[in-house]
Amino acid sequence: MKGLKLILASCFFMYVATVQACRYTIREIGFSTLSKVTYVIYQIDENTTAFPRALELSFVNSNIKTYGLKSNEDSPVVAFAKSKNLKFPAYVLVDKNQRMLAMSQDDYNTNLTSGILSSPVQNRLLERLPVNYASVLLIEGSNPLENEEARKTILKACERITNIMPNMPKQVDVGPDMITISRDEFNKERVLLWSLGVEDIPEKPIAFVMYGRGRIMGEVLNYENIVAGNTFKLLSIIGADCECGLDRKWLFGYQVPLNWPKQTRQDLSDRLGFDVDNPMVLTEMSRILAMENRVPQDPDGITYEPIVVDLDEEFDDIPEIEHNLQPEESPVLENSESNYIVWYSLFALILIIGIGVFFVMRKKS
Image (cartoon, rainbow, N blue to C red; front, side, top):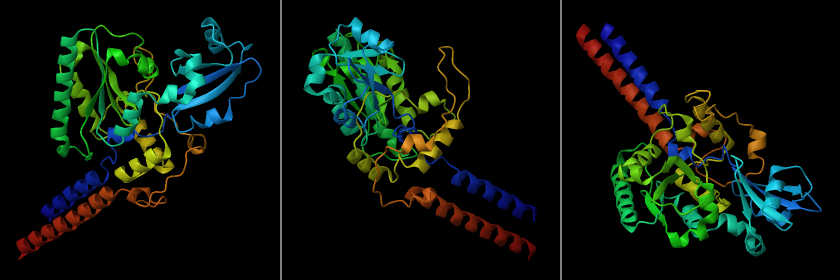
């Protein structure tokens, strides 16, 4: 009888461990909109605080919020615009760390939205990130030999990740790739590079590992870190289960300005088998983030406290996604892989109980 109890106990713990396994990877968490507003584009005008409606709508699918200010207001943004001698109406882009970028008259007279969201690299990221595992952004320096060494090391790391992807918790269609910004392309990527804290051409090549909805994994990789193999280490984290005990800084990287139209969301939803912007999915992801390390703040003063999600505030302006793979009222069943795990674990439970009963009956006889 003790043998049967031991088998039943083992069965139970195996079942619980299987069913309670994390349903999302760090890459999938990276697609969420739990921090959808990362930047603010301000219009400073002499006569009105109203932001042009048509221009406001052009940012609605991005992680940029619009806001209007009058030129006589006491605001750091207004002071910055005046210090740059901008003509009104003027536009200033501000990130969450209060860094500011003045948009030139050419930028907004041509097309302000395109100038902020549609650089060649931003368009490539929008095309690739929903499909591939991740992208490594290499920003070339002044030394061609160092640039070439950085390229070779990054490509080797991408190849290593592609080779081990079949052993990861979730499968992705395409492995990581590398996107290069040369010195000649620096001005075309001014907004993107500014968002990464790169305002001048670096002396040595640097790199950023990008995943999800334009998020950065970890910190900037300088040349020494690239050749030391740290690109592979950062890439490997992206494919891990979300509840692997990592701090939130590894789960919720800083975002670059990026458009994310409805068709991109629909295609991503079809690939993942669930809608990352579904309020119930976001609530579950928020719970996962809340389970991570609750250290109040690190030495640099960056807080890692879990985010409290206000559903009404977060989801009222998100367009509906028509996704037929999942019933909204039953989020636990919206992923076919989850169904498979549950049925498999139930079958295993019944099988092991049957084997246990067989051995007990045989022993008694």
